[in-house]
Every structure is written in C-alpha cells, then in structure tokens.
Length: 82
Image (cartoon, rainbow, N blue to C red; front, side, top):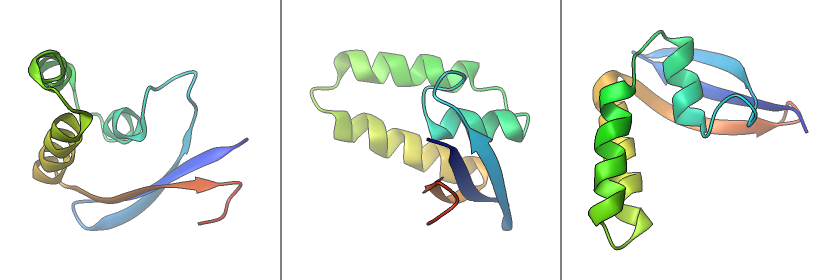
C-alpha cells in the first residue's frame, strides 16, 4: 500500500512519499525531508522510553519536540486519500 505523509513545516504545507522499509515512523521521514539531524532527539527518546512505564510519555515528548522544530499537522495519506 502506498503511503504519503502530509505536514506543515514552518507554516508551509508539504507532502512526501513514505516507506516503512526506509523509516520507522512519519516523524523520521519528515525530518529527513527537511534535512534535520535527529541523532540527539532519537537518543533522548530512547532514554525516555527506557525509563518510562507507558508509551504515552514518549509520544508526548515526540509531538512536543516536533512542534518546537516547526512541524505541525502530521498525518498519513493512504492510497492518495485522507
């Protein structure tokens, strides 16, 4: 199934192709598309995941950090549809 990710980066709407064989999640894909290095972010996320008892904490961290980076309105489009 073909996937696309639609998002806004610093207020500009964009759309990219997405593949699970290349990225673990849509956050990594949009960061790569914008040329953002996530190495420090991923390290912090991994540490948080190791000490957190629930996935909600990690998800909230990810969402908050991506908003700080300038991303908003991230979502998947499947087969070209919303």
